Length: 471
Ligand code: ADP
Ligand code: GLC
Image (cartoon, rainbow, N blue to C red; front, side, top):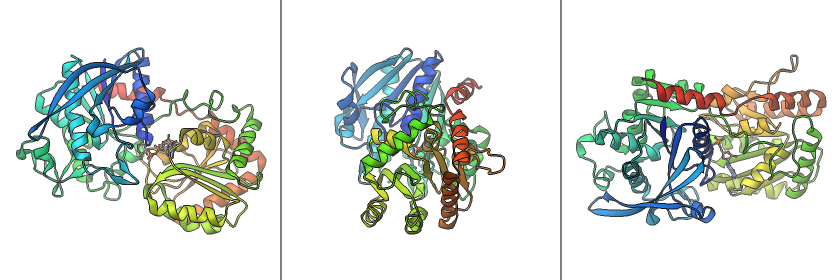
């Protein structure tokens, strides 16, 4: 099968969150399954700074308003069968960030990604790629199904929702910018509460829709999680599937990870303790013996920062260490930094995006905090399991599908779940974690349970292929 994956970010080329992990892993896995796989993404500044061997294939022009905007198509064969196709347009993509600065989106994101969507179809045409399937991801690629149908392209079109809250809704003037006929501005096509919605376009014009966990696939059909798109999603629910994300077991493997202090596996957990010791030291925290709670996350309300911040005073009065790595909304970053100033021996806040520190936190922590308000799938908890770090999660979306609550009697489970989204429930979960930590034997049993889980891509990649093959 010839597959084209389209995404606004993909590991290892550019990453701000889980979308990059998923797009990068599927690109690799489909290729390994001997499907010819192309990954289309913008050529960002960060990608250019890390990859120098990209091959120029073609120059092209795309109509934007009255202008013909020029761009270039570059490629790189990354794995046998897996070829990355980059859309270069420096005015749009040669910027310091992918989507915006300090939590504020670039003002021309609609034009940038509208251009990208047109350019992808142009590249498919110019490179003569005969694609059986086009696999689009999130709102940035939402107009591809629309343009593909307009052009009469015969590839099967799958649209994957990684996060329904990010919709790409823009002023109606984007229709002129992208030369889209106004007749498409109606409630059955592109119109959404007075705006043009890229994500709605993806949902409406795709042949199948998927999202990244079975529970989130059900949740988004409700008003609570549907983000006002539950109506349209319900009309297509026989074409909506939840396929659970995996993680790349080569990138994330404590036994082979060059970015952790000391490599380990489930038979050498004492080395995990060495990782913790060195991490605690590097972070400048004081007591090595306290349980270390780690967090690696975008700092946005989705991730549960309101209830976490509300419980921090009490949390920090206990014998604990906390490390949070992330970047996002300034209001949360500032409050977290204040806590660090008040309790410098117990909590370290690292603002930024840093792969290496992330690996050290996954390896060195005892528990991984993920109190997300909602979570389409979540990869942080899966990475934590792989590193024997026990996730503490709110029972929602993919967190519910992947974490089994620890049972003190049967010693089953792989983490700690709390069901109500409030600070009391979170504090109670942390208390349970501390008790478990103090009971060394059960703690080790649970770590083993965690490391025995398998959330590699194997079965989920097959499910995508089954869907791609469906009539
Ligand atoms: P989301 O996609 O909603 O941000 P996921 O849990 O699905 O959440 O995926 C997040 C991914 O991004 C994980 O691979 C995580 O390790 C990584 N990540 C998040 N924030 C940072 C950061 N500040 N530095 C390094 N990696 C990060
Ligand atoms: C989104 C979601 C996250 C999911 C990721 C990859 O960013 O917030 O839950 O794991 O996409 O699908």
